[in-house]
Image 1 (cartoon, rainbow over the protein chains, first blue to last red):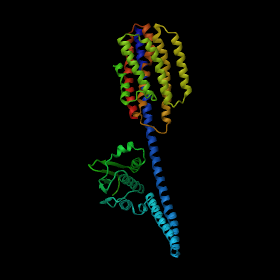
Image 2: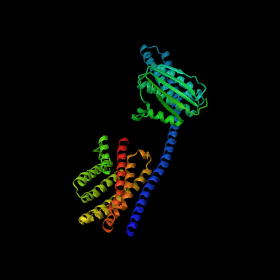
Image 3: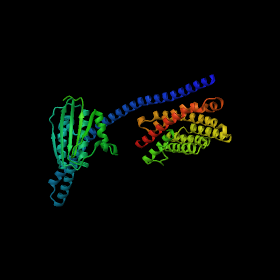
Image 4: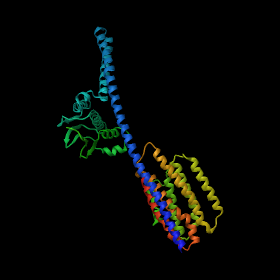
Length: 256
Length: 205
């Protein structure tokens, strides 16, 4: 009888030790995993930050190469063609030269647009609001869309990185609205609320759920918007409206 | 209760439309679980068939499913370690099979459990090692494997001593084996719940 009590005791102690060892091992795995998870997340955030910085630098370089190099050369070619045109008297040749000039003009406009899209020159010199205003004017002209832009808060102070990322975010949202939303009207305005700066974009196009699309999409556009928001600590919120879409980008800790 | 919990993983597989998705090793374990539960319900409870035959077959199927699971999850790396356990298990199983007798069922169970438990602990250690070697780390609580492996580890750790000492308790003491066997029932309940969560998470991942 005494032996059996001992056996029971040994049995339960042994089983408890085995169970505690398994649970302890699982807890160690969970805690260590959490730590590694945090480190890897930090690493990927840093990697993202670096890749955005490299992207910005490269965009600037390519835009400047296009603007100062190719556009300059094409302008020189255009001047030669104009000079030849004035010296030419044969109608056939004049017509060919005119075609060449017209093609060169189109190419120049295209390259200027590419250069502008890569890195708007106003962003560094005149700041975010001027650049956004200029961008919306261009969009209005190119796409025949009614765009209303209001800037009740004009004097905003944001860092270079913030203004660059905000510009790219707003550009991506608006180009998506035009590309997929079948819009005819876009409203844009900036508001200040407490310590937050809010960039509000509204359209009258096809309604969509940003975060559902984000989950389903294979493309990079929407994912880049979120990555850029994360990069500058901004939040993207979608307010559901009866017609169209309303998206708010809030930037915290900004001195207005 | 434990028997009915054995049906849940399979029902979830039906719900997820992945009953025959045998590429996912957890599906095979769910199959094994429902076959075991059906045997216990129909064979043992209704027709009073001895559990010895099922014990013998279950040990083999359990090892094979776990072997497939861990080999698959390790991308068939650490082949030598896994093969060593497979050879050891087959040897032990064959020897015990040819020494079959009505009275040594619990002894056979203890020996095969010893090999399977050792295999599970080693393979789990290798899985953890690989988990931290990966460049991309997923949230553990959202992965199906984590629940399955937690269930497996807890089940094998908590039942190890019971299986090992069952033969001795049954033949050498006047104690009721059921007093000890209760731990296996509780471990089974917990494992079946975790397997059900694992099958459910499989859908999400």
